Image (tube, rainbow, N blue to C red; front, side, top):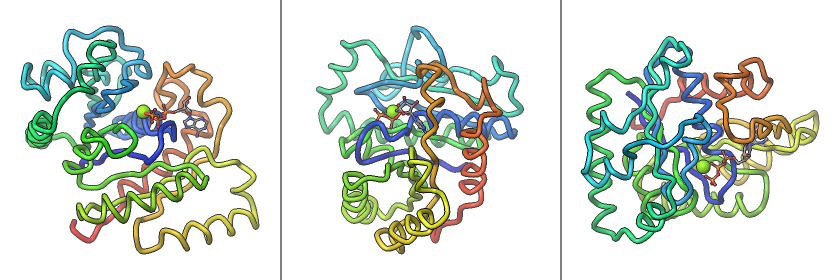
Length: 262
Ligand SMILES: Nc1ncnc2c1ncn2[C@@H]1O[C@H](COP(=O)(O)OP(=O)(O)OP(=O)(O)O)[C@@H](O)[C@H]1O
Ligand SMILES: [Mg+2]
């Protein structure tokens, strides 16, 4: 089983959208996939998968209140996928978000153990991929997902905030943790991916990041991606979109990726 987090320096780069669609693409191919919403400050996967209130959440599993089987919802059967697609949602109730923000270091240490326990159980149950949709930045909950992952996919936009922030994360977080990463640029202005501009863009990215991370690719900004108003996983509902075709190429690169420690 391969475990990876999807993380970013700044918010809104497209992590949740990419995590859910990559998970769906993998499950459609026949892989057994589990995906967790670990963004406790702004839970989103329930909206994307169109799931209403649950009786328990990832928060409860990390607090050792429920078993992992109670938290993971089987989405695969609804969509007739070849592989399993199990999703763990984070508690979207405001009180739960506030409670989560107040958790101390001790709780987060226990949360790492619980994530490791879950990783072990999923591996034993024969899952192929375990995906963690992280919160942006360097809060404990994000760092925990990076710690338990085999590698992390960093999602960035083409702007100076993300360039600078991602460079800091590579040097001061992933590096010291000895964690492998892949860098994916999302919402790229389509013009930048054509002809001479594309060569220039690749050159600039190489100059900044070569030797520090593996470049996973560039995904254009598609105006129709947010049209589902954040309430559908396009790989499941509109698989013929150019956005999904590009994401299928990205998924193949993730499957083929090799890291020094593998
Ligand atoms: N390639 C794309 N083209 C156009 N819109 C996109 C693309 N990728 C994602 N989006 C849109 O960007 C918005 C933010 O996406 P998303 O919530 O997945 O980001 P996020 O990184 O998970 O945010 P957060 O840091 O708050 O968790 C959504 O409206 C989503 O539909
Ligand atoms: Mg998100």
